[in-house]
Image (cartoon, rainbow, N blue to C red; front, side, top):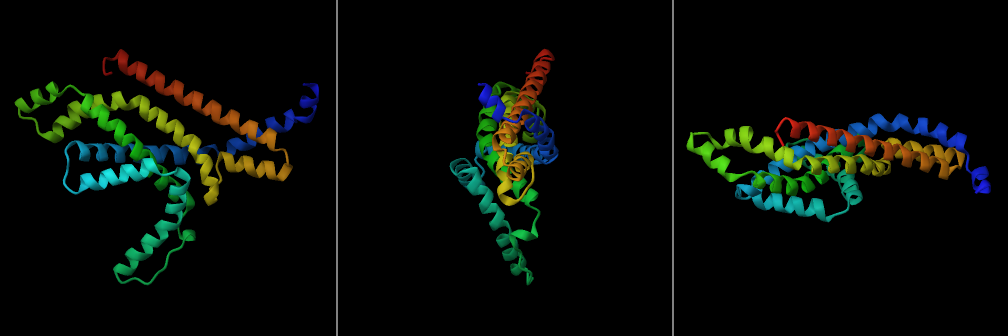
Length: 240
């Protein structure tokens, strides 16, 4: 044990811990924005499936199947190289001549689009279950007094469904924060990229990676406690 302690540079691990934290804003920005967009995408996808909207229902099924059935890293590369190709095609369709490449778009935007695509596919299933779990008797009562579908969803169904889905949203947010470790592959410098740079420069990989593990562990604990506190408050107010 003493030999291991002698080899492991505790001082450098502590120093790298604070260096790694400089990537925290990028990590939180990508995770938060992609999760917000993913929640919106998940809700709309779930509603399309619940109300069985023609054509869109089949497209949403395809989206969920691809989003849940393919690895996130492959999706990241697909969007990284696919978005410029798609934009070039749209530009050409409207008579433009500009050709876009993967260097034409900030990689942070690509990361957000990819993560939102992924988390939206997963949350759509959760929101489907949450929306259908709301007592249908409330919907019938609302219809009986002349409320429209949009009003019923906005005032009765969605507030309850959001609370039911909250634990899954919390879990998805934590997963997205940890999944940001993949974005270094498209040159985004977040927490893990900071760790890799520090490790490569100093050749002290164990110290740096254990420090980054602690950072993500603390972030996850804070997120779990925050969402648990929020859910508890909702229950105390009788919303949940």
